[in-house]
Amino acid sequence: MTETIENAARDDDRRLPRAARRRPRPRVHRAWIVAAVTFVTIIGGAAFNSLPGLLIDPLHTEFGWSRGEIGLAVSIDMALYGLTAPFAAALMDRFGIRRVVAVALTMVAAGAVASVWMTASWQLMIYWGLLVGLGTGSMAMAFAATVTNRWFVARRGLVTGVLTAAGASGQLVFLPLCAWIVEEHGWRPASVTVALAALVVVPFVCLLMRDHPADVGLAPYGGDFVSKPAPARGAARRTVRVLFDAARTGPFWLLAGTFAICGASTNGLIRTHFVPSAHDHGMPITAAASLLAVIGVFDVIGTIFSGWLTDRFDARRLLAVYYALRGISLLFLPMLMAPEVQPPMIFFIVFYGLDWVATVPPTLALCREQYGEDSAIVFGWVLASHQVGAAVVAFLGGVARDVFGSYDVVWYASGALCAMAALMSLVIRRARTAEAVPSG
Image 1 (spheres, rainbow, N blue to C red):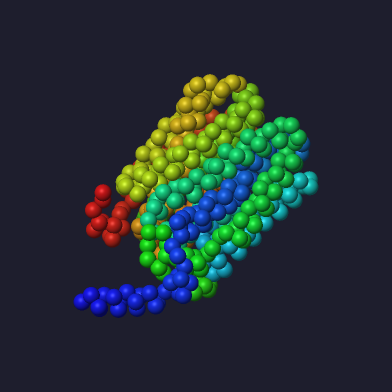
Image 2: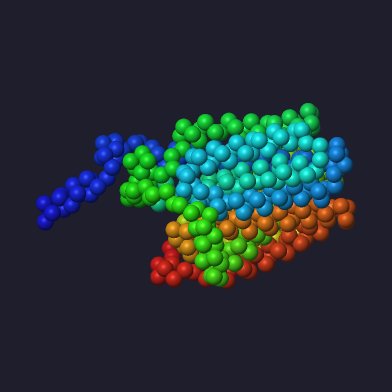
């Protein structure tokens, strides 16, 4: 019996690549290095996301463009960000993570730099909307999902939370910096700054990122060795096929609907319109941007903690709690706006920050539970709905400000939508395979 086991072990070892048999086990698993590079990459790509809310008033003042026009450019960016994500996940399967991400960072930098010379609003649509939207969409949360699925078996919820928090970390770093640059030197140097931030990350991606654990002869963290699959051809066709397959299931529409409301109440609302709304009430731009950056601090904490909770509790119930709390906080926000930062506003910032993208780990966990190997692409489509929701509110928020002279109606409407998302989360059915496994 012992001899049989030893022979089987030797056979398994011979099936591993030669590099995997020779290479001593590293003290730090390479998956954590790849996760760290992914974290930095998302920060670099997200640098631009801190900019539009700061530039609405300067662009309105310099060019006379309405807030609705500027909001439309932001909405194009957000919509393309979402619609690109599922195709980017499939392209990473076809061409590799490194190539796709390096090209995406270059596109973000090109769009940000080109905007320095724009003179018409249609150019804003192309530079901010088209180039930056396609670039940032290729490094969206589907990128984090792809890295997590390939490199991790254990700690997936935690890693998802950390990588999701990277966008907030970029906000934390770049919002105060860009606000100061806009206040002291104008909006053009701020645009150049975010372009440089995207370009600086490219060498890290080229040198340290790897497409698959098998590239370095390793098993995923917490799992068994898996050979690298052949490049998947027909990326666009596969992406559309996965969409049609998922669209025939009820959970997809519930996940897409709740995530659309998530995008509407975060990127479309707070990230785009919080600074100009606070400025309407007499608050300096730098102070409002600093508050938005503080949201980023607590977003990091909340998202990582949400990942930890997702590994332990029912993701549907977590989503319901997150959306309900977010909706309540938005209903109170119009009463907190003032020329100076008061303690109730600080409480809102902390509370809202903890909830900002805490929805991502449980949403991704539900995609993984429902759709298995296609979960990264399905999540990409769910993320597309997130960004479409954000795009709609980014545009309508600007229109509402032009029409009503205030953002109050937008805050109240978003609070009501969050209540609806909480109810939708609770009716998502569990996958059959998950029902057989006791929670715990």
